[in-house]
Amino acid sequence: MAKTALQFRHNGSDVAIFVDGGTNLLVALRELIGDMTPKFGCGQGGCGTCSVLIDGELHLSCLTLAETVAGRSVETLDSLKQGPNLHALQRAFAENFAAQCGYCTPGMLMAAKALLDRNPSPSRAEIVEAISGNICRCTGYEPIINAILAASGGRVSA
Amino acid sequence: MTRHRGRGIASVNYPIGMNLGGDPSQALVHSNPSGKFTVALSSIDLGQGMKSVTRQICAETLGVPVEDVYVDTADSDTGPHCMGSFASRGTHRVGNAVMAAAREARGVMMEAAAEELEVNAADLETDGRGNIHVKGAPHRSISTKDVAIAAQFKQGKTISGRGIFLVPLSNVDPETGEMSPATCYAHACLVAEVEVDDETGEVTMIRMDSAYELGRALNPRLVEQQLVGGAWMGVSHALYETPEPYYPDPVHGPRDFVEYVMPGPGDICPHDIAVLERPAPDGPFGAKGPGEMCANPVLPAVANAIFNAVGVRIDDLPITPEKVLRAIKAEGGARPQARR
Image (cartoon, rainbow over all chains, first blue to last red; front, side, top):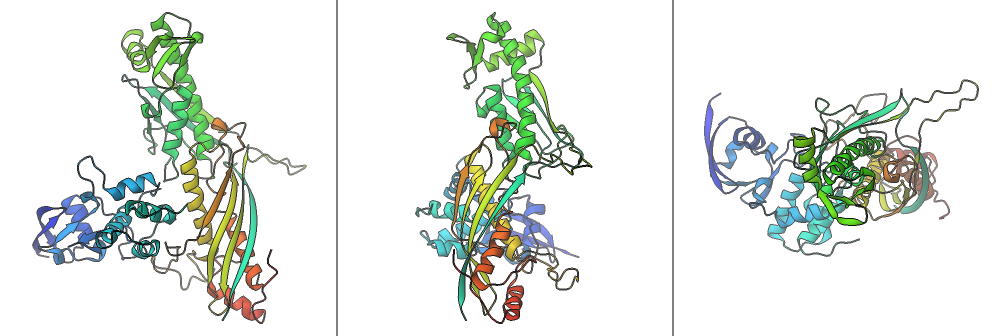
């Protein structure tokens, strides 16, 4: 199959890769660009751990054809940390013990970022809604919700 | 259509570790020339906090800051044998092995310090901040880093220790059937409150109140995390998860995470947790293990709560809306039981 040249912005930097037709964005990010922060969970859009932002909007990279991001901006978990400084969400996740095995964490953080970017002070119900496409197999939803509330300056329930 | 509330209770007595041919785990501890320590294990940390808790145990036993201990684990090529992270055994078995290894390493460290300070090792103590000094004379002091350097480059000693913790196999007495499958037990009690919809058969968790007795909680936040997640794993087994919904008939088995139903963030309910600490005599610093017993009481408690709500006894897991509806139909309608 012929390869297609693909250019897009990846975490603020221009990247150019060659992809096979049908390559999904998750594979392009992990295997061609080497950004391992979006995780492979189910490959079917059922778990949310591959979540990334495309032009600021939350998408499942395993269900996104790589070619469709040409000329667009893709942000992964790798974009959150600025040098040694953790993003407010990452700090809140650490302080609220919101990660156990950690496999859902990249997707949870991106879903949370997408929420806070459009709604800086969400209610608990809005947070639940925002992460409802993300499965946490350790079932630590409570601390994850609390972490997002904390990052948005909301009051954390006991 | 009516929604019925019900409350159910269950308690468990849960053994720590297993009894299938002996239950050992090993640990190795050594100092690096920087005065920091490495713990080599092959025990897996799958999110339950094995690395954090063995780090704490090692630091406490050595008498050094927790920052000075690094835990290298999860690879059986580089770490000594571990039976595994299961059966709630990690903190207890591996923790005891790490403690034994750290104790041996501490002995060598104190001997090396004694040689440097020209005193008797029995007169020395650690301050927990990276120094070793003569008891009652803090100025007669040497840092663990300087001890490590002296041991390595001057005295020719390795500051290291080996540890194993084995609970031997307990055989069944053929006369009485008696055996001692575990050396200590954790305990849990949980009250589940549910709401059952008698038209859809759907069960909603309303709240959970629980108490756990797990020896000493070495890392209270990690224990709490384990208890919260474990309780929801229990709910998931009670109400949602199964690879074979019509076992043994394999039809309608789930093919993906959409069909393999698990709780999502919208399903969770308030969960009150009380942790009771009664140190285990043979546990590392009194710890047992919170691992599995936090999931177990949820299943019978939820089944009891459903009975309390609509008067049907379902003893087949998971308790799906279909099973609830069929049972209600067989009873000729929901029969709420007395609230307790």
